[in-house]
Length: 274
Image 1: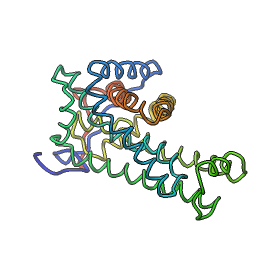
Image 2 (image 1 turned 90 degrees about the vertical axis):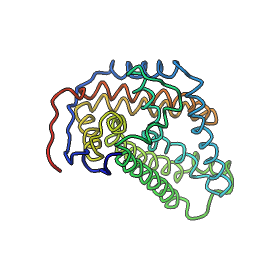
Image 3 (image 1 turned 60 degrees about the vertical axis):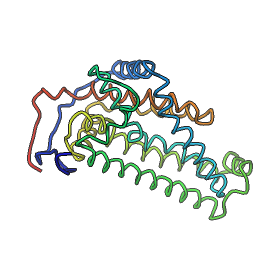
Image 4 (image 1 turned 45 degrees about the vertical axis):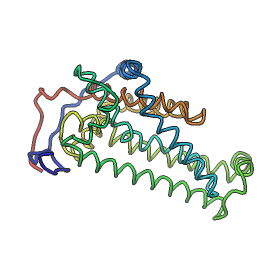
């Protein structure tokens, strides 16, 4: 690593990559290319991503065993908040495959050698903080409706949530709050990590470029967020096992979405001092 820099690139400049307008067909094509990357060596990626269902089950066991049943759903949905950072090794695999380089799964760890690692770490910490804030918010909404007393059992909790007015308020308020968190993460990181892997532009530029990409393609990015959410739910249903397939496909697809949204580096970019 030549120097420690986070806010700007290695020259202290704020880079503004050119954002393209995309279509709905570009989203499906990115998903298709992501699936192709996955199926190129699926055993490697499934092995690499088994951590997702394992962590999911551990979190569920922890929340159930510590009388925190009410946090199971927030923990499950929280995968969408930390997913952009968790999939960073998969972006690297797609980048290497695109360049015709060796794509052995061990190269997913090559991210640790990236000159943009400090910027990647900063945005990763931001996402983890949002994840913790989401859990705190979810717990606060539950407490406002049911008090400090934890659910007596899974059955009692489900009965209270599905058959009482307090339960319906919990569902509506919780999902509304979760939607806000999801929009914030989508707007700030939809292509931030692939951009940092491809070009060391600094954390500020990566977040700003993601925001500009969303503003330039609001309907397409909203659809992308919906696609990600639906696939994560599908992958989480069978005891999180489906995440071992869904997560790598989405990770690879995000790299290809980045390629469709951002002009190649050879195109003229705006640079200004920080």
